[in-house]
Length: 215
Ligand SMILES: Cc1cc2nc3c(=O)[nH]c(=O)nc-3n(C[C@H](O)[C@H](O)[C@H](O)COP(=O)(O)O)c2cc1C
Image (cartoon, rainbow, N blue to C red; front, side, top):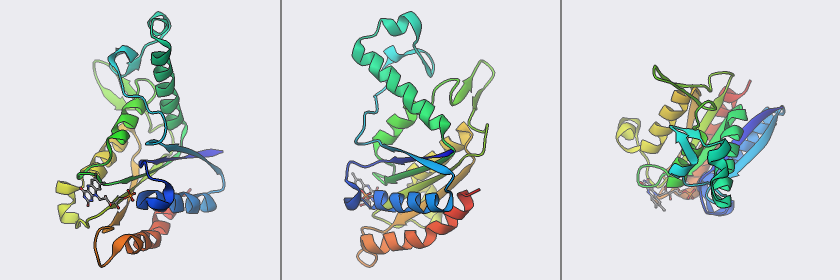
């Protein structure tokens, strides 16, 4: 079975969150269209995502092992184990759905903490004197970033304002996931559109992206 990894980025329960509501609908439609996938989920604002600490590393992006690992406290070992688990799970996936709100023209900081956990040497990146290269172009992988936002940003302003979306596209492509899609749930704070209107527009647009991400 292939794996769909759903990463949601919000402390809110699903029924209160636009990004999570649209994210769930996307996941459901994707799984109907792709029954050969199983679902893995990380609700990263409500789960243990370790903050990186220098003691966990022996080198750039390389986690401690052996004697250095044994010297860590139980809590620190749990953090290292969890980082490995998150990274391995990410590498094992074939499709990715990330759903987050725009916060201060970016996304909530927890998503960066998660990405820092995932990007590990020899799992996600090859790092040597000559190059730093993504390893996730080893098989067909596809991703969509679903972002809810109070405002609506025309394409011309996107480069200046939509930093979370632009960054995520760049980092996914850098690690080797070139097939990257975006679903904007924009204008939840606008009187005319509101949350329901913005969600409805996203529901209408999502089948096209599901289709593109399907086999
Ligand atoms: C801390 C914070 C920062 C925000 N920053 C922005 C912003 O920079 N631009 C914007 O358009 N909306 C911003 N918003 C509004 C949210 O993106 C919007 O309400 C979104 O629909 C929330 O999605 P959710 O229901 O999944 O949390 C912000 C909201 C919060 C709580």
